[in-house]
Image (cartoon, rainbow, N blue to C red):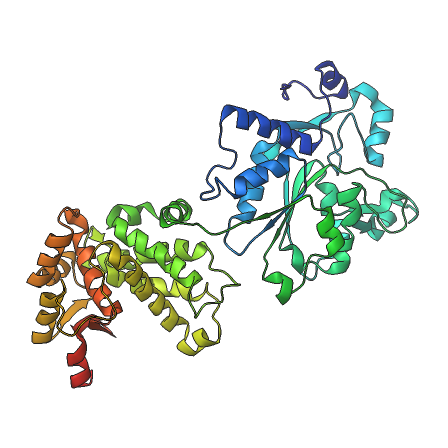
Length: 489
């Protein structure tokens, strides 16, 4: 039943309108049922979970369970919890002045009960919007029971001249104040075991215990916990009796394919419209950016247990556009296009988001990031050009022979960072064999994207150890691999 909250301001009017109390879990369940029946998206904007996490989350809500979202960092756990707010009723009535959002038909606090006894049907009612029914707490070692549940407030006792035996001296913590709301505790294993124990009664019986008071408040809460499997060994664990009281544990995961990862990156990137208007990004560049994260998740240099957050691709994409934007500003150009050499600018976005194992520490964070970019190039290269076999017969012909011979005869090829687009294109067009290779194997490739593809060929040959690539202060130099060895460069 939808009530006109603007016209109802007293308990009597609320009763007359036919309001019936409903628990928050029933709210979520009923509204989810309606969305599923109508074929509406329940968790819009979360990609890659359509056939895995979201169905499990919906089943947990239909079962009225408290939920634990378990997964590595950057897997949208908190976003899923926040999106649950959309399944709540838009407005709910609350007794005016109540600290714990007392339901007018089921008051719990002493304040609410005394107000009802005093004013009856004239008891004032306020309305709480669903956006205000989300509470979130990051679990840290310094969190106390008083923070979450509550404690005796000596200042209140002194001001009201009350004995500590009077329950009016209680100061409620975050959880009672989140009554009739969604309450999220992020990184649950970080919460000390004795604090986790304080949640037992709330999850099982719905009541709380504060000091020595005989206090029973049947709180109405939807708990959502998030946890990282790595935390179980590094910092703590979820105590077994608490896990037993959490109805559903749902495993999250990273995107399974580049297309999904691209949707997430494009949706979450914080870009200035002046950047997006001035910088053209080929689709291949977007795919390559996402492939870097895929390579990192399976790299021998990166700690797989720590995970590689989706934020890696998001911040790398922002850096990529900023790299091109900066070049355009320096050269005075109104527009520019992403180049593969611009990926040097994404390294700072990668290094802070990957945890390295011992071998990775030996290589250094910047070195590992550069390796990941090369690995991403190597993985995408065979999708567009003939595969390069590791073990080739000495005199076997390959599609790349003419291009490699050009480098063998020449003195190398340079792409400078501050080349204008015209200079960049002219430099790549100066290699006839490269143009022929593109024409033969990707004849229908969009003209605007062809220069990124040309650069991919050069980087791909480097990744397969057919050419050498050297970074110097002003740009990149590509040379014949063996010629470099002979010359000592």
